[in-house]
Length: 100
Image (cartoon, rainbow, N blue to C red; front, side, top):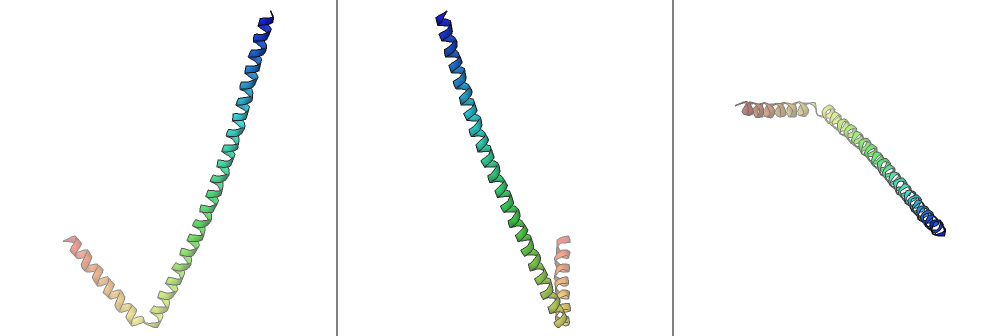
């Protein structure tokens, strides 16, 4: 009878030990997942901010380029018409050769 109680106590101790180890593993895994989630969220926010800033910069540069071109055309209308005609002629030649 004493041997059964000893085996039962020993079995309970082993079971308690395994339960404690599982709890510790669960806590570590939970902590690791939480850290990974925080890191992923931070990375996402950083990338989102960078892309928003890049988009804003591109929009600003395109507006400056448009303003610069519009100013040039207003100040040099004949040159602008000449350049447009030249570009159109070159494009027509290229397209014609591609069709041949």
